[in-house]
Length: 79
Image (cartoon, one colour):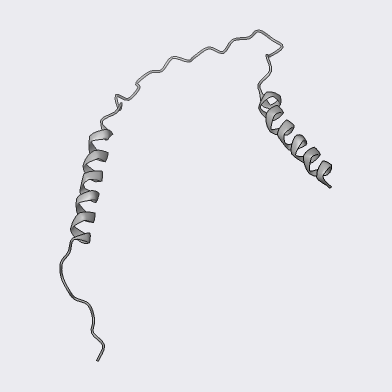
C-alpha cells in the first residue's frame, strides 16, 4: 500500500514536471516569417482612463466611509 502511494505520487510529480515541456510549441518546418500589416486611420485612444478610474475608486472609498460611519440609530424596536 505504501509503495503504491509513493508510486502514484512519483507519477503525478513526473506529469506535473513534463506537462509544460510537452505543451511547448515546436519549431515550424517552414521558415516563413509573419509580417505585420500597415494600419491606416488608427485611433489616438491611448491611456487617459487612469484618471477616471482613480476618481471612481476614490468616490467609492469615500462613499464606503460615509456609509460605515453613519451615526443614525434607526434600529427597529420590538413592541
